[in-house]
Figure 1 (tube, rainbow, N blue to C red):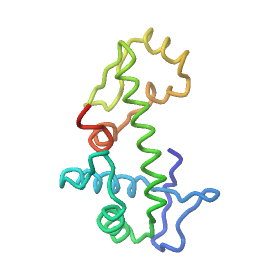
Figure 2 (tube, rainbow, N blue to C red; figure 1 turned 90 degrees about the vertical axis):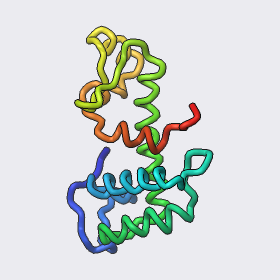
Figure 3 (spheres, rainbow, N blue to C red; figure 1 turned 180 degrees about the vertical axis):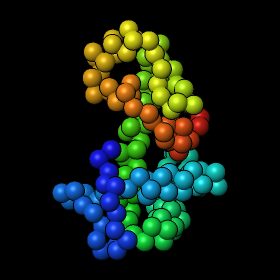
Figure 4 (cartoon, rainbow, N blue to C red; figure 1 turned 180 degrees about the horizontal axis):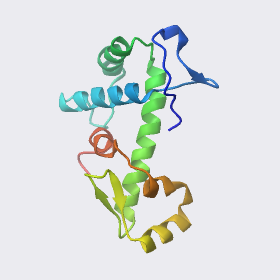
Length: 149
């Protein structure tokens, strides 16, 4: 999702695109793993979010130490908003669109060519779900899905 693959170890030299901080694939994966650990530890609230205290003291502290960076709560909020939107769009594909499935081995959504053609007529911006793998889908489901749904 527009992430830079070149990262510097100096936190003051965080890469920016315009005014946006770039998340490397490694930092993104670390964030996902830290969120999964927080879910497993019962740190997610009843509204399926993490407290600011948990984010700052457990997630960001660890992420910043591991990657020698300086991600803030705002960076976290922006990144998780992007991840949640991508997850919810994918979940909608499975929930409300007949003929779609999820292959956890290939990390891809499955459907016949006809089903994809019809769906993409109405939702052209979701072509990425047909053409690309979504390696984080299962992890994001654990992080963002409401366990009571």
